[in-house]
Amino acid sequence: MEIRSVMPAEELAADEVVAAAFGEAPDGRVVQMMRALEAGGAARASLVAVDDKQVVGHVGLSRSWVDARRELVEVLVLSPLSVRPDRQGRGVGTALVAAALETAEGQGAPAVFLEGSPEYYGRRGFSLACALGFEPPSTRVPVPGFQVVLLASYRPWMVGRLIYPEAFWTTDTVGLRDPELERIEALIAGG
Image (cartoon, rainbow, N blue to C red):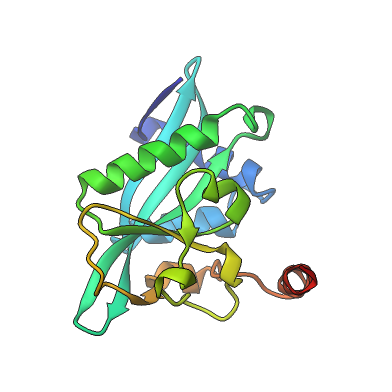
């Protein structure tokens, strides 16, 4: 398996992987978010996992900011992470996350944030962001799902609220909405 930047001829295949992984139509919200990030200039990396000349996974990195007391700090958000359903559970996602973090480090980002499963991402180097002094961009982001990896250029003063670019808001891909948010909150409250 090879992980590398997506080539123009592979963009449609990457979109198909993302749509399938999220159980959405080919023009669903997550694919629309990716396109809006690119159109708005916020996309910083789009990586694919290719196996046997087929795109089997995709991960995106986009620019966001931490509203620190001293100044706005440009950071990266890992979203979306997608693996073709028939290839899930075989290390493709883990390899994509590692490549995304390496890319972020190479770009000099101080931190990489995401919304996702603390069990899955915790095993891949992410920590609970709120425990480190960060605030989620919305009250609809469950605290356990708001996670971060701090990179070499991070400094202790770089804490505050995460601010997403417009594309996340216009596609309504921030956090969860009811009834899913209500279900997750009940699970968290239950222990």
